[in-house]
Image (cartoon, rainbow, N blue to C red; front, top):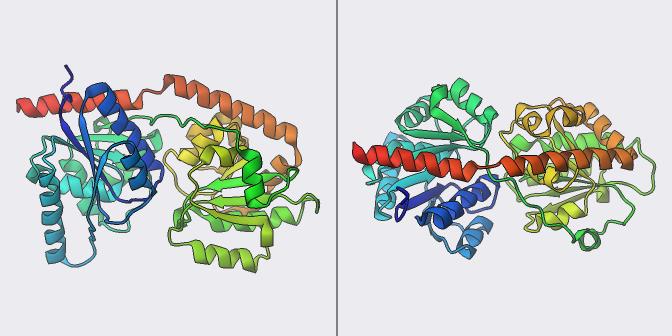
Length: 383
């Protein structure tokens, strides 16, 4: 019998909206329930409704939300820690599994007061924190017994930025996405795009770290250099995350008109991918971006930024389609090369799909994570 059988495992999430971290967490939660008969719940650090909450509830996982704000002075922050500790203790946890910086840090600071025998650190990005100071993050990480990173890039970030000991950080790749295709024509009609147009897609929330602004500038350059008909289209799929108004204003200033479509948050990722010819990610920082994994699984070429988190996924063959971060001219050149050649798009997309399938066969992230958590839980209970 697994040490996790019957254990109460509380996943702590920062948001109610669906992103890569929330999908990855659900994959692990589903495995813990099905393979280890663990009891799984969510405590979200927000009382909002959202697509992540709805998806977890559809999977039969109880979801509890509470608004948690770290802004304020020391007295307020002490009260926040006390409140988070009490809310977690009320769920009677054996193991806490937070995802992303805010949940990681808060659980690292309070887990010993909750009755849990173990907490885990899940590093899913390589973005600097806008909420916590470095000393607070380092303390919470040092107090956390078990640390996971979803890529070598994320592990290196934990070591270099926050002083984690390399031997304490386990690199566990999340489950490769399965992309269900077949709704492309319907998506093109919905978006008002003709059958002959080349369509580029950036699937990412409208957040500053994603640097949609460079992509819009690159798209203006590309439009000026391609034949007038049929004009290519750029679809931006993702929820507003602080940058929507600025990006729409920039698109207007660049006179991009109907060539750029703000599609909002999309649940049918596979159908949208089937409508597109090129996957784009212009981020300045990434760990193991799910968008790139989905592009590759969907057989799309990837035009992106030459950063470790993307290079790690596309490999040497795909690296030729990467541009330096913030370089609109170079990104435009990559897009133009792919727009101009259906043969190149097919070849690059097929290579990406083969690489994605190879990784999917070797993927054992949830199994490895469960084994490490079970071992750490057994040791914690012995002591």
